[in-house]
Each structure stands twice: as C-alpha cells, then as structure tokens.
Image 1 (cartoon, rainbow, N blue to C red):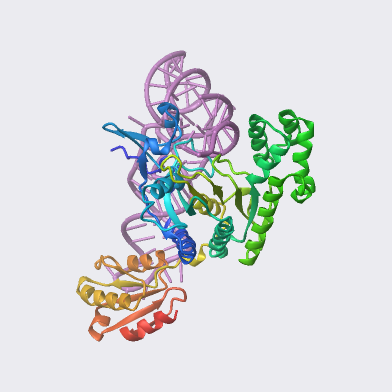
Image 2 (image 1 turned 90 degrees about the horizontal axis):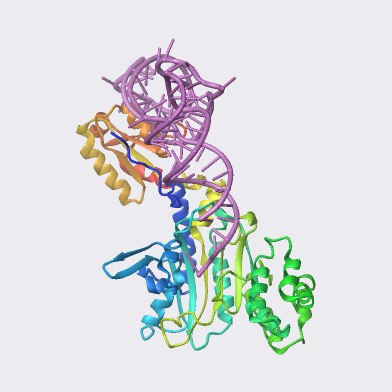
Length: 430
RNA sequence: GCGGAUGUAGCUCAGCUGGUUAGAGCGUUGGUUUGUGGUACCAAAUGUCGCCGGUUCGAAUCCGGUCAUCCGCCCCA
C-alpha cells in the first residue's frame, strides 16, 4: 500500500514536543505581560469575508497572496494579520467597548505567498493595540512600545536582549513638505528610506528621484541627526518635539534600549506617526522581530466614526522558529517534563498502580504510567528512559503486597524502597 | 510571476563517466538478558530510485517534459 506523505505542506510549521513546550512557555509569559498591562484578549475568527480582507476587486490577483475560497455566494478568506479583524471588531462593537480600548490577539494568520526562509503560510502573530475615538494621545505610543519591550524582556532568558528603533512618519511628511516634493517624489523617497539599509545606492537613488538639493537634505538627516532641523518649519519642529518627548516617556517607563532611527519606516501605508521596530541584540541579521506604529484611520472602511489606533505586531512563530532552527535557544529546561514514570509489572498490579498514579497527580507531580502491563520489564524501563522521566516508580508483585514502591533514580540508577507518602515527598523536593 | 538547486528505505543521505540481486548510518522490531534503561553485540523487516516519455541489448545513472520541495528575487496586505 502506498503511504501518504507525512511532511507538512510547504510553509507550515510543526514543532517537536521539546520545542513546543518552549514555544508555549514564551507565548504564555508574553501574554501575561500584556494582561497585566490591561490588554484584553481577543480571539477573533480566522476566516473573514473577502471584502473585509481586501479592497481589491481583482479576485485572481489577490488569490495568489491570500487563502480565499467560496461557499455558495459568499467569498471568504483566511486572515493575514490581526489588524483587519480588529478594525472590523472595534467598528462593529463601538457601543459596547470603552475607549481608549486596549486589546491583544495571539492568533494564527495565513498568507498564500510562496514560502521561503523565515516566511510561512501559517504563523502565530501577537498583536497589541490601543484605540481611541476622534483622538488618542501620543503618550499611548510610548506605552505600547514600553509594554512590548516588557513582553520581550519576560522571555529574555530564551531570546536574549532586544533593542528598539523609533522613527516618525510625521517628520518625513513635514520634511518632504518643506522641500516641496510632489506626491510622487514623496512616495519614491519613502520607499528609498525604507530600504536604505538594504541598498547600496541610496544617495544616487535619491538624487534621481528628488534632485540633488533635496537628496542632500534628506541625507543630512542621517549624517547630522534630526535635531539639526529645528527651526526650519513649524511642522518639522512639532515632529522633532514628538520624538524627543516619546523618548523621555520611554525612559520614565524604564526602557533603556531604545534609540531614534529615522530610517525606520515600516512597509504598510496606513501608518501616520510614530513607527518602531524591535531587533534582537544577539541576532540582528534576523531582521525586525516585531514592530508597529500609529495609524489615524484604522477603521474608516467600517465606520464613519474616526477610530485612531497605535499598535504593534510580533511575528511570534518567525521569531521562535528561527531561533530554534539556529540552535540559539537553550531547550534543556524543557527536556524533562515528566517527574515519574509508573512501571506496572503484570496486570495484577494495574489497580494498585493507578491508585499510586492518582496520588502523585493529586500532589501536582507530573506522572506517566506504562499500562501495557504484560510487556517485558526491560521495555518499560526503556520507555521511562526515553521520556526522560526523572524517576521510575516500579510496581511489581512484592511492592503491591507490601504497599510500597521501588523508586529508581533514572540519573544515578540507584534504587530504594519507599511508601507512597515518602515517595511523593521525595519527588516534590527534586 | 522569474531564477538556481534537489527528488533513492520511516528519517538523513551515498551510489550516477549506463552493466547481474539497490547501499550506509540512524530509527523500528526481535534476541544476547522474561525484575532494570542510557553503552555493546547478533539478527530481521522495509524501495514502482518523484512521475511520464525518449535513447539503448540494457537506465537510479544519459536526454526531454512534468510535478513537488528547498534557496533566492518579486511581493509583503
């Protein structure tokens, strides 16, 4: 009989138990930080109407990038990030929510693009957002960054330290306006600045797009610093002030690993103010591991009410899988989840063994039985060894009759006979 | 959508200047040892050599096509 394939579809991830435990632990810690910061958990549908997911009309074109399908007359698709669903949710429940509304999502998202290294078709993303109606103080921008920095800090022992770079779209809008750039030139300059670190001919490209004078000015932002533009124009001053105040607030929340980098742009068009990206200190070549910014018209396609947001997204799967693939996470902490393996020598011992098992679990000890009681004892010990149980609790005829256990330390190989109570005490101390 | 590489055992791969019966390691199962694992030794099972076609007396091997996967580009909502 021909066997069916066991490999996952291209672009899909599955982890081994040790990796999964690490993944889950990190996910839990980061979410706990967000909950403590008062972000409520939203678990939104993975499937949305196609019209919610895209503004484009060309079904064939978007089909290559998203997972789309149709039931009856309803075209629908899998969400590709958390923002779209959140916008819809907030606009739809606007009367039931309290603003500023803060929410986080930890959910799987789907993209239909062709997979390559570090880019998956299904992945977990953690989104956190604060939304306001009509207005939302920029102070929240700092809180979002500080909260996310705390979330990363909670998993520092696994991923190492992070740093954050902060940019400001308002600065560039003011800059471009003062340079009298056309809309087209602005767009071109945006793209170039966004790709600045990736391309070698940044300056030459700028000259070509916006002319030599403007190119020199833009380049000065990076060579002389943004502060040198103070007093040039009102809007520029405001943007510079916003950046300075932002950094002060970050500092007062204890965030020290942040710096201003006006080369941070973010690809998405919807950002309008502060933008930021997080990087790993020890693995900068991985690229941004999370980022976000402020968007002024989050939900304009769902509601006439003006909803303003500031938010961030963490490519959680990408981060964890990349680190695990490169063996940069010490997984030893997750290798021995089982404290005790209960080995049952013969079916007469099953009932007694089950009572031992229950007693162990009631005491909070992670215990696994080997219930094929008539298998050779050798296989049972081997099983205990393979699941890396810390102890084997052996139940044979003698043990059952005397109401005791043979407790074998699987690391040292030594063995002793204890009653159940003493066994539990021993296991609790290890 | 474009380019490069790779498809052989459950897994990782070797074999490929065409030549009898298709190889290794790991893993699995059994045994050495039916109340003791990690190490050792012995043995066994497992293949449409991705698929289709061509060349040839003969193809895992050469050629064409096709599909799939990986890597990169494009894109990144």
